[in-house]
Amino acid sequence: MRLLKQAHTVYQTQYHIVWVTRYRRKILVKGIDSYLKTLITKEFREFFPDIYVEEVGIDKDHIHIHCVIPPKYAVSKIVEAWKSNTSRLMKEKFHEFLMRVYWDGEGIWGTGFFVSTIGLNEKIIKAYVAQQGKHDAGRTAKLFV
Image 1 (tube, rainbow, N blue to C red):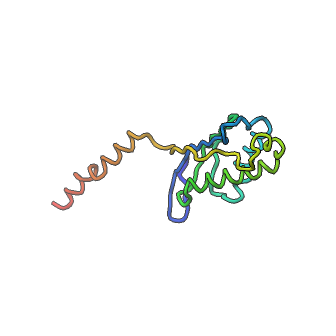
Image 2 (spheres, rainbow, N blue to C red):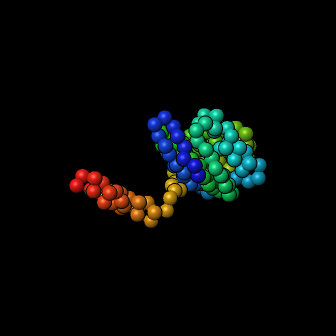
Image 3 (cartoon, helix red, strand yellow):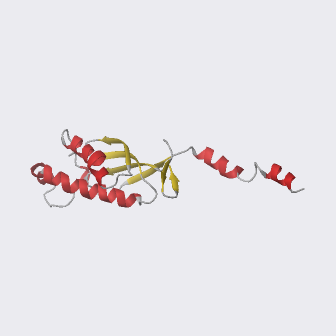
């Protein structure tokens, strides 16, 4: 993954996001899954052009997304936008099918989500942070003697 730039920020913020269907209903069947993937990868890009969706994996009752979200956005707000917009658009397109499963008129996604950062190895970061100030200590000390 390359470093991205925005205003006065350089970032490499990758996330693995997962959320489930309400009641873990197995509604993400063939046709619905491809429409959902299109919504997440193409339609959503119109509103947030600086969010990059690297990969989308859809199972019958949950969805995985590997994406890059700039630090100017809260991950929870992006997931909230994804879930609310996809729920609304999917209910419009697959109304008959989804009303048989969710007859109460509520959304199709379960409450909450899972998010994990994807990045550098923890050992490498710890070593890098621990070494700060130690590499130059010998050379700069000699300049002032």
